[in-house]
Image (cartoon, rainbow, N blue to C red):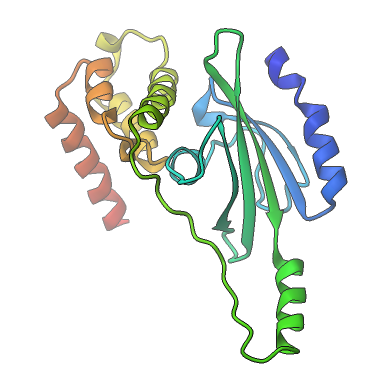
Length: 218
């Protein structure tokens, strides 16, 4: 593990021990996006395993309305079995200010919600509200920052192998991964991928259509 990321392991442990059994902390190495998870504690919350990839980095962090200063705090998503998870993510940079990793805190709100529902039942007609993720309105400086991070992820997904030696199926698989992770939701990424893979934008779109077609059939 990168030495900078290793320094965050005690941070992860102290957060998990402070907030208890329902608090999961996940450490990502974003230099290897396809297998970014390098450390977890209390991973029963979402089932994250070392060697897995990131899930919510683009859609719930980079494109969130409250992403600022390299972190997004208190956004929500549902686990595979329907539990509401409260999450916060902090990006980690190296000495050259490039995004190296991410520290994610996931809290299972089930017990909290059960207690709220019980208390609410004692106060009839008491309103309840759960916040939803809202995509960020495009601010020029913010979007440039997000595009910079997306470009770094794209470079790492493609890797150092000469693009002229990549087979078609290898390019399609890379684009499949990017599409699944929401990278193409960020403006300008289609053009960046086309340039990096030395193919046209039309070809990138055709690959995406092909991927979506296979997913729909599946």
